[in-house]
Image (cartoon, rainbow over all chains, first blue to last red):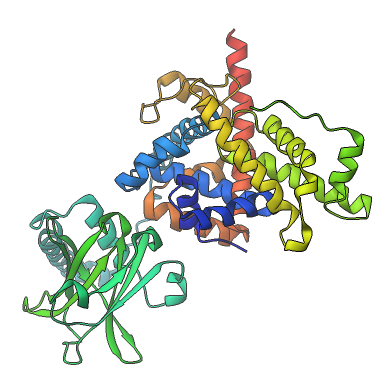
Length: 269
Length: 191
């Protein structure tokens, strides 16, 4: 049985509870096949470290708890070399050139129109880019997760390995009313499902601001809307690395008219 | 470490009796647990997992009379209790390893963020060129992307090869072993 890879990485970092670690220790001794899953998790953890994907807490544990044997240090060195080499090789492969189609009378006639349409599309794309990234100075993590959230999240079965948080809109009142979650239970990426009010404009494009007192806002723009059996919802994938202990508010706003669509409160303990 | 307890034949037979009355079946289960203990100590970063496994087995054999199967605990849990104490002793006595085993992957250690020097890349390129064409393509595809693209690329490879992520990594590990052997051979050529 395949274990949540994120949990295995936490096991390797020594950040599971004692009883969870015990379970994996016993499996490691009793099940030969489990060793393959552990090896894969070790390797992916090393890659996460190389790519700067570990939270500061996990990065510290990586150095202090994981990287304690010559074999693992060698794995890190070896993997760094291979990734560096392969990245250069892959990026140096030229894109295949397209054969120019023979010019026909029709394509000659429509070519200026096509060129004009292409210019308009590029200008519109640059405008969107300016709005969503440059003007708001999105961090690399925000840009990466914005791109991730633009993937098709309609199939929830593909997201079943992520820790889910379901929220309904409400006034952000006090700590007692917020939905509470334990940080140790979070997977590396957390799935948020935010029910939208019934009167939400279905054609509006939305953006999300994740706010915690004392920390910079984490923004995602745009975020798509999904239908569910009760109406519509926003699905957000957020990195656990930004979800430190504290009270949070997610504000969903409309890009069309800058109106707040909903406020959602939760807490990480 | 405490004074070593050496395992005699009589004690070994009694140890096998923990697993099964059938000697052949007991032998297989004993071997599985022994290999599992080696994996356990390796995973915990111990430099000599075989010795620590032997020590665990010796101590279990010395305390067989304390094992009570009627309490429902399995033999592997009993072994684990001793292994976990030996691990604590090891960590107290030895601390962290800092030296590299010179049989490890090549060229220089050990500052992970340090950029590869030209000599390392040249050796790596030469050894990757010596791989079979499909192995070379696979390892470049496997390592050529980062972050989200890394995940998507590997999912595509698994779909194409009809294998699990763990099986794919096993295949990549074999290719890496070939590369490692080649680079060691290159290093010896220069000596």
